[in-house]
Image (cartoon, rainbow, N blue to C red; front, side, top):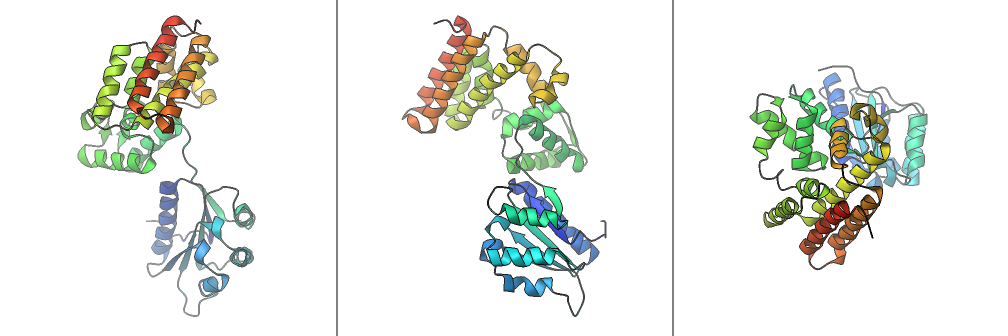
Length: 324
């Protein structure tokens, strides 16, 4: 392990809890690698007064590295913010001050002040799209010595969902149970059943107008306990994705990936799904998906029925071309 101590000021900036936890842990580990006897203390900013951190931030009579972790920096009161920003102007090289902040407007002046003081910023914002989550999956395998192609990462995301902690746990499990070479076939074997009854299966069938297959996937998903909300979200995502790709025109998926902000495999799939759709039909399908989302997320007593009606409406829009 590298024995170089971390910088004296570290700002972990973003709202993805898993990435923030990892950033804090890695910084603490780096401090302990430089000094195994490092004194590490952690506090919640909202429960901390300026006087309580004075000892940790003042020069030590006995030497030794110290690490002060202050979580939820946006909740720091004015006296603590002022004390820490004053300290940040001339930090003690034997102290590592780590502050976490979600990056929102609350407490922004504190985060900006730490940046201005020269803090090392570790960005940990939530992943916003499939391309970023796919990259996370591949990096997760790579940093543990495994290999995973884009198709396998996509299959894993469809099976597990978008929660980063669940994704990381799934990657860890696959690495533990395989030789580290992760393919779509490996993911299908480990998540057989779960992936097959996901909302994506329902959406894929509905988008090509295959009502029997969509209803079969939907009813089986509900039977085995899949929550209706992610199914409705997957249906809406399927319609939106086809609409975005169709409006971008034909082109090479790999060349379009950057401008559309989605992986090439998803663009290629959407291009295939877009055949038979007119702009008017997509508008009708988006309206049906929006109505379904509203019903499933609180407006309907029978969420399964709302999902079935959405499947019929999406397929009908495709077959009629949006004709009124």
